[in-house]
Image 1 (cartoon, rainbow, N blue to C red):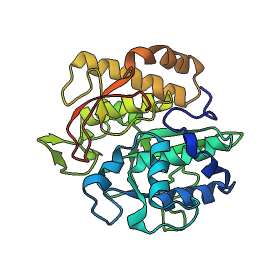
Image 2: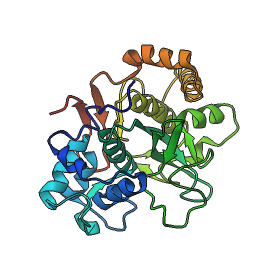
Image 3: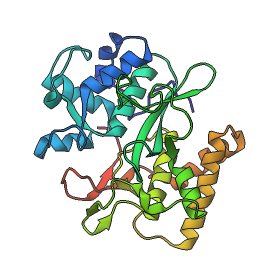
Amino acid sequence: MDYALQTPYSDPGEFAHLFDALPDDIPAIGAVVRNLLIHYRGGGIEFTGDRLAEIDHRWVSSILATDEHRNGTALAVPREPFDRVVGCCRDYTLLFVSALRHKGIPARSRIGFAVYFGEGFNHDHVVAEYWNGDRWVMTDAQLDPADDHPFNTLDMPTGPFVSAAEAWRDARAGRVDPDVYGVEPGVNVGGLTLHGFWFIRTYVYYQLAHLMGEELLLWESWGDLGPTFTEAEAVATDELAELLIAADNGDDAAWKELVNRYPTLGPNGRTFLTSPSGRPHAWVELAKH
């Protein structure tokens, strides 16, 4: 896959010209992304109604359309926190990836868990990787590098971020507790706890989808994904996780196998959306409107 090309999700569409004025250095692009977005749970403002519904913006073009309608100025012009587009880590990453691709820099999103948001729990998270000519560089576009962090957020080392495939492998092997991987400790929505084996398993499939250029929202499912699964389905996820880990380590055969399998493992144009925005849970078509 050519990660220098936009996907339907990352394509800025009619707003591509707004990216032309962006700075060329990676840290400055990240700063612009943080100027445009505010996290729906971690931004310090409680959003409701239509504002909270902004978290369901599937396409970068929709994010930019909302910002253009509300602010109508160059992307680097400061926005007040309340005037930013409401989103989550997936949106920070996708917008960052979109801007880099616009400049011809290969970039992609990575699905997994951050060990750095709190002690004793690994929060679901999406970070970006870009190709610097020699290697993939991992960066967390949601975090301001000027803040105090225990690592360089612009070039993250191995450890602070664990891919969903790695978390699944280690949980299945009994090396980690699956219940410390999820949204937040104790979070329960409609009787469903948002952590544990089922949650990690869903994120393994998100990891695959994002690598294949379907940068999905973090609250949709398809096929046999859900709170219950059989041992046979778990074994199939074991195999998928190992392929993802091998591909991450440069195994071309594993990558080709993932590409070949994706048509049967991906959502195939339709997902079941269970958004925290409060909209009714329903099947949705992924075709770009």
